Image (tube, rainbow, N blue to C red; front, side, top):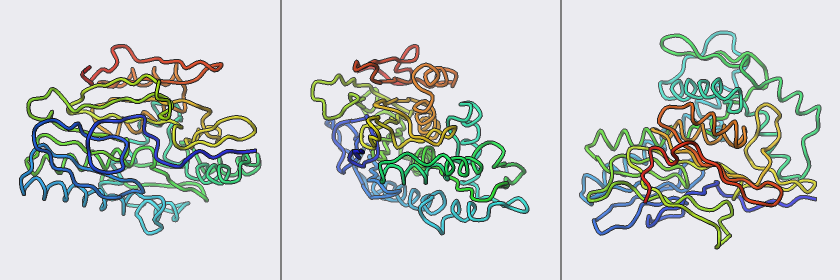
Length: 345
C-alpha cells in the first residue's frame, strides 16, 4: 500500500513578496524592486533586483538566460546535455574533456562526497532511477536490481583530474546526477553575472534554493522565513532570518515523499543504500554560496541530525537547522550559533 504526496520541489523556505510560484520570495519593502521570472530546470525561477532601471531589467533577463545555458550543460533529463552525453560514454577509454562549468560542478560535488563519507555522490544516477520507479509503483526496489545499480555508483567510478580538467567514468551503466548541486551552482553563476553588470543587491530564487548578494537599500538583509516541517500545519513554528551575501537551501520530504509498507520515504536517495531517506525531516543550510548550501543540505538529509549537523559545522561559514519527527514528536536541532551567516530578524 503506497501513498504518493504532491510532487513539488521541496522548500521549507518562505520569504515575502516575489511574483511567481516559487517557495522563496524576496521581501516587499518600500523601495522599488524589479522581478523577472521564468521556468527553468523544471521549476519556477525568479530574479529580484533592488531598483527598477532598464539596466536592471536587462541584467535580470541575462541572469535567467545564464541559467537556461547551464541547464543545457547540467541537466540529467536532457539526453543532449553535456552531462547526459558524458554519462552515455561510460565506461570511457580515455579522459573526456569537460567544459569549465561542468568541471567546476563535478569538482565541488566530489569534494562534498569525500567530506560527507559518500552521503552525497554525483554518480548516484542509477539508484535515483530505481527509486523514481519505486515511488511510482509503491514497492521497494528488488535487491538484485539495487546490487546491479550500486555497481555503477561510488568513488571508484568517477575521476576528474588534469588541467584543463577531464573525466574518466570507469563502469558501464553509469548515470551522473547533479540534482543536489547543479541548481545551487546555477544560482551562483546568475548572481556573478548580475554583479558583473553592476547589480550589487539581488536575490535569485529557484523555488526554495535562494542566493543573494548585498542587502537591499535601507535593510540589513533579505528576509527569509524558514517554514515549519509540515507547510500545511498552520500552528507550526516558523522563524525569520535576514541574509546578505549568502545562500539558504532546504532539503527534505515536505512536498516529495512516498509511503511504502507504512513507512514514509523522501525523494532523496541515500547513495550508500539506494533507498530514499526516511522521514518526515527537513534540513535548512546557510552557506557563503548556493553550490555549497545545495549539496550540504542534501548530504545532511542523508546523514541525519547528528552526523548531518556535524558535517555542516565543519564547513567554514555554514550553519544548519534540522527538524524531524521521533516517536511522534517533532524535534529541532541546530548548529552552534544558528543561523550563522544569517541575521536574526
